[in-house]
Image (cartoon, rainbow, N blue to C red; front, top):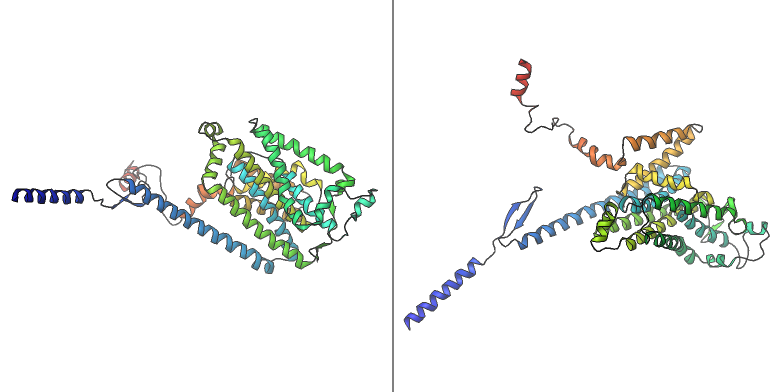
Length: 428
């Protein structure tokens, strides 16, 4: 009996020792990047803790970015109207509207690698959608706009009737461009057309739409476009308060568009877009179908262009087939190139800076300002291929950090700064 008891005690002690040995001790260690992470003997909790810390850092950076964007939006809405004249504020509102279409270009070109030279189509479609409502808003049901009476039209076309309703017109601003882009994109991408061929097709589509709207005098007033808007929600369109309302709405839509693009590009969807851009064949072999993703991104980009066209039309007071001109679509791409591809903030910055520079140069040098514009584009292509934001990430931040510090050399160890090496050079 005593032997059995002693054996049980020994086995119990042995079990306790085993339980102690199976305990997992956590201890900190430093990873390759120099940041501290918590590891375990088993190694399973290390990955979980590291991943959670990375998620926390990512969430913190997103919150900081959201705070900065919100502060800039408040600055634009509350401070800029006090600093700028009514004319300059209207120009700023137009350029911020153009920044929305630049975000769409960056989404499809910078992140997905699809260079579209036909976004003027979607920009103009959004502008025509809101302009058709503005033409019908002050009129009674069935009454013809003024330009139709000039061309002998006796009955309002059927597709004009829904634009009596502001909600339907608002939905049409982004739905019609998105549907057009979705249909065109599906026909193109399912045949695996990409690269320069995709750019040529979008440019050809721009020519088709431009000629169509340019020749429809009875339906869209042809070359003259739709203009002479009177009221919007009972307010006079040209009044200062109404224009400030349009300006504020443009800022809010720009913030919303930026948030949408940041959300799309910051997760797995964004990484997949970059994979399609860098190597579409590898993404296809990995089990993904790039066609659906490219069609979706193309449609979202077109919807953003339609919203930009509507806000631009409200602040300029006119929309015409000139918005579908090839040169205008190429300018959109240049804005993104100047600001920096695949950065979002670069697209906004490029659109605002290039258009403000264009406005100021055309005022000061009306005869030669195009030469300045051409020189700017050559400078960006040759000296700043990554755009302003790309240069800042590659060189600007490093130069700012190196201010007040001794110059670093590429050798290791620092032979150039070694006193013994300098003394030997002096003796030689």
